[in-house]
Length: 360
Image: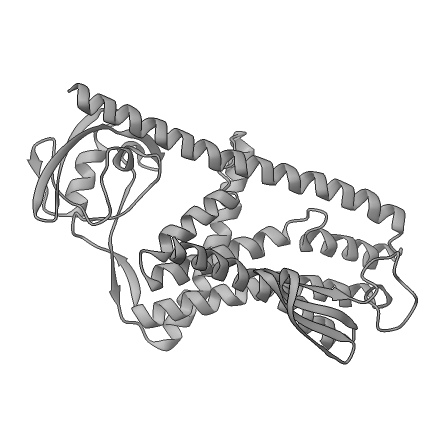
């Protein structure tokens, strides 16, 4: 429990603090006066004023914040070092710096894990490396580390042979014999239908373990950069597919993310830091979306200001901010609802599977 709490605090604290650090650094570079720069929220535990800036460490270590002078149009006095006294492109650079720092953090973490651990490759052994929550394997009680030895009574020597035997059984019951701690056991479960370019196939929600091969420095850095690109492109394609097919996006909210971080903290240091990289990419990408109150929304407004040569007004900002608040709260509620439904569905399925097993 303590490890999980520390892992969550460290993850969110690092990702959000570095995001805010990006804003702070570019504020300083563009000559914007920063009144406050804090690590954490809530009651101030330690503080020091240097020049115009109050630096502080606060009680709740979940990120931080930056307060530039004159960041609200209502606060503008006309001083040349205020936020809204700077040209639109300077403000554009300030808001862009947050997501850039998230991608930089992800690049460092991805590259570091790859260089230290090696290039990850799926293991050929029929050993479960990971399970998808709510899928048949997890519901049936299979665990990471279990070695699958038979599918429907037929021995399997490798992952490819084992997965091929499962793929052919679409939405059908199969018997899986596995080995755990030197003892064999069997479970009966029903596959789910999945589709790809090769057509429909049966899946039970398992992934192979990972083996690592050493890589040289430049290749490791290139692979780290590719991970940033890959996960961003994957997110864009998934969202585009959801919109095109009018499907409900499978968003993870605070509950889901905390659960994922907690599990990663217990699986190994490499997996944990790789996950922080994934979360950092997600935070960076989300903040680039053109939604009011997010960095992407501000960037769009400043770009409009630069192209139209019209200054933003207080009335305009009130309407934009109100719309942004409604959108963000809606996304948060929807993601939290998804998290709760995943937990409820998983628990209900496990109870049903346990009852079915006892009935047999």
